[in-house]
Image (cartoon, rainbow, N blue to C red):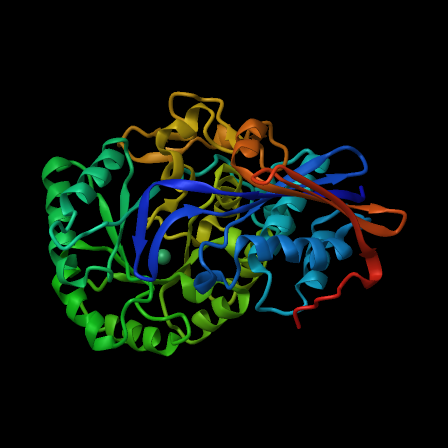
Length: 457
Ligand SMILES: [Mg+2]
């Protein structure tokens, strides 16, 4: 099967409430969705979620520019029949290791969705068999985590509002709550303690794990040790306290944690967004584990490289996480969780709350990029112990590719600009529809081989 056309959707969705994290407050997410169509009529969908330039080095409109000018020329007309075909294509597109990770993720996920449809297999099965991992006799449960944060003001620390939101999700079965810290440092101790006490009192029969996420807000090991000593009895994990560029501080902290009784599980996030950063964290023993944000880090190729890397670091743990993705990216990450399930830290759970962070629970009834068969639960169900798990049968769907049905109506509703790229007599043609300006532009943007006018070396 040969790649014939790439459709790029520049989307915009406001969050249901602003989400403050230590590096800034987010009001909306601007993600890129892609649909890649082959000459046999099959098509695959993917998503890239840049969050912030300070996180990924990318933003939505630049991702589209990269896809059109620097990825499409290498992709259009190429033949895809195996996992290796996709890996070598992605490798050739990658060129510079630090760029493109989100843009590549969108394309990579779409290619794997496409290959899964061609082979009539779910993506996770395709990749597990490629990596020679054993078959599941029964699909594993993925305990869900949900992330909360506080929009504190001078007058109100908003702790009660945060506790209410966390309670709403724990009452539905969620077993892990992740709390953003480092924004309102003076009230963090009180907030974490209050949430912990509340959960213990309201759910005495259950263990609700609390993780705190520093989002790079701390500058000294001693500063982190001070807050951790205060909140240690209430938390199970600590995520990315230091800036991504200083993993040696994380290594120093991790070393200290080894001498402290009941120290939290130390995990990186921003600091392990590329395969190079991930390897650096493992090699320098800078943390016990890392988040796995494949939608921001190169897609399934990234997951495959990590799975191969983990053969040398078997104790290193991963936490698949999609807090800013729609159903497409979130489902892709769910497949990646099934690929590396044996390396996952079950205590920190799995973060697949992207669809809920934007439209709340109406994602079940049409407000998301994918259609959910079970309108009552979406894809989140409770097990007998009240632990929220993902309805894998539903997510795996008809067993082909990502296994989801795309909700084109919702995709159209959140799309501000749509860009199509395709080959026309050896030249790349581009069609842009700007829905905000009600404008349509059609142009030939150059010969496929010479189109790399703006290489990012
Ligand atoms: Mg984080």
